[in-house]
Image (cartoon, rainbow over all chains, first blue to last red; front, side, top):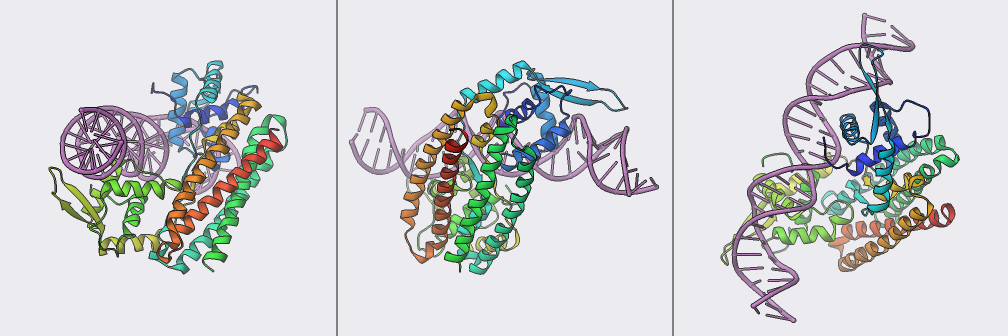
Length: 184
Length: 184
DNA sequence: TGTAGCATGTAAGCCGTTACATGATTGA
DNA sequence: TCAATCATGTAACGGCTTACATGCTACA
């Protein structure tokens, strides 16, 4: 548990950074997971609960987060806050490490590649289902976007959410065009 | 090496399927890797050479591919062809396993989320670089698209390539809009 | 009384990467 | 003759997931 943080570590640290200036005692692993499900899920990953906890341990070992233990009930609850060192590390990471080109694991496109093995009707069904899944996703992200509002401190998360919405719209338009123009 | 094939296994098997009706003795691992770099790279992954070889071993163990060994020189060269069983397995996979929703690992969007830690100028630079990287990628995919032509047997790969081009265009438009409207 | 949500972890294992190792062939 | 390309693998290991294990709290 002494290794270099990964991109996912910094992603979680970044989520904790939004609570830096509040008075709260921090987020539990469980709350952090929920926050990741509302943000990271759409353009990075939603780490498994178990990974959230192991990342928090790693960040704590590096003193990038403070742990506040709550022995309220029979069980210990831990709240995590980003530290000054954590914030510095995050800023350095942002400044020094250029982002990689986005990676897409698009199993719908992958299957379309092999369309000659499945036939046009199967591909049409697949794309129609995908278009509908895109709408579902879009609705989920719209809800998230709504909760962000227009406050200055959430300006960047709002931009990212708007990016995601535009991406879903573009993707849907492409799929519908494939359906009507190429598989019609 | 007896395990279930993964999506990447089927992706590689699918690439081999395009040579099913030719008279060639098949593709070497090396050639398959190059083919993956021209197709899968844009919307799935470009597996490492070592993984290409281990996937081919797995497919061979399942009798989804035939191996033709060539002891021409001092070294053995292996050529792989999809078998009838492999083709059946691939068709079943296409028919029975619904595709997952695409997964995006978008480190540019991830960093934009934390824009308040890096500042507007840094985010502008990052997005401008990304827009330029998108053009480079698009040019690479345009070359691939050109090599596919309009032949009927490559109709689906051409569709997928066109999808990719449209995606890059949409992504670039969104980035430029963020730059001018939100970070101007 | 029981179930859903809150809360925290360990263990096993797979997918995929990087680093390492080796050697033939072709062309500048 | 030297470098690039063709060609094939092994070993180590990291990131992440799934399955398993535990227990509290609130509420219907």
